[in-house]
Length: 112
Length: 113
Image (cartoon, rainbow over all chains, first blue to last red; front, side, top):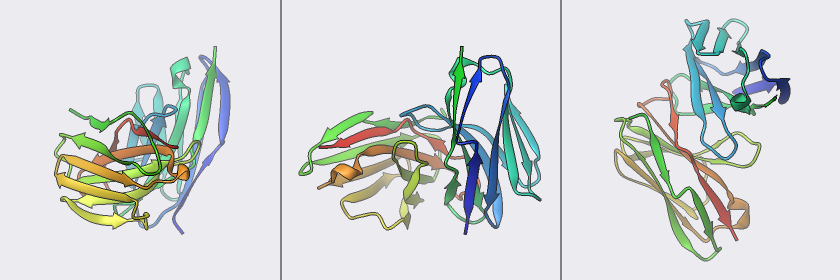
């Protein structure tokens, strides 16, 4: 069964600190993995997208890694800001399908 | 232009009302999607259109009726909804195939009373 699991479910950190969010997936055949940021009540906004051959991709203070062998990905946020408070969702696509498999997300709260 | 525009942003409707949600994109994407998202849950796929044809219907009740009048527009017609249908409805678009990046709209917050 195609599944995407994320951890932790929620996380509270102080402004300026770094954090790492985890994503494990069992999606086959794998096509790509994306990380989205979603503010409450708003649509998800793409942070990164990685294919099988990519193992690191950065977008400003966000760095995503992908290990296709272990089927794990992480999203590292550097020097967190209050505006980083949101849900972070890992989404995996299976090749040849329109279906995106969503993880349940990590709710991040950054405190001043 | 990398925007997916959804209207209205908020909608309150009675169980006997008929209303429509609208979605528009001008990125040349030929795949468009409707998702339903309940609070603190991931989005759930409802429908996928590819080249203006319905490609996927995830066993959605017939009180939700999608329509794709052209390659830039996607509608979701609502009729006889139930209170449990209250949710954030998200539209997304992508180049054809699930292998490319999907862009999401800001959603329509629907409340059924």
